Image 1 (cartoon, one colour):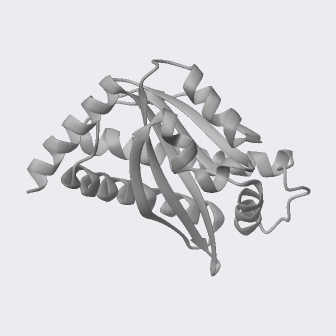
Image 2 (cartoon, rainbow, N blue to C red):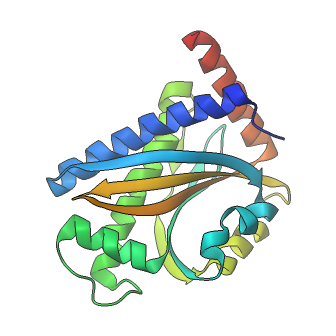
Length: 204
């Protein structure tokens, strides 16, 4: 299963709306301007995540993970390398982290950032595409990229697809790059793309 050009552009538009909402929420939370950008979107079978996230594969990553359920169900993750995660939490709080592995205070901030970003992305799909979505409580971890991918491979149906979104955070003249990964079963992906097609046809 692949995205056609129209579906790709529609997803980018929807994700930009979601990232705009996330940026507004983070700006309100921190009392400073936070911009989120969606420079790239791609879709792969979960087994290809190693190639699509090649820059992170050799390192440990900080991840916020949420399960979402409804007609379109799956896993959503925000991934940053630990240095980027620590930098982001410092930029948002003005408090330097105690370590690059995220101390408890930094983990709390990073979890909240992930919760805002992931809820905005998936919530935008729900709101704009009329797909009801419920979220689990987010969990945060610092581990190897291989471990994250292995967990995705172990759970749910064998054949699942990952929507990989490059997420650019900009605040206080600094830039931090992370990734949002949305993992869907074939059935959920088909429902999502059908809803995207309907939305796109209404947009004209």
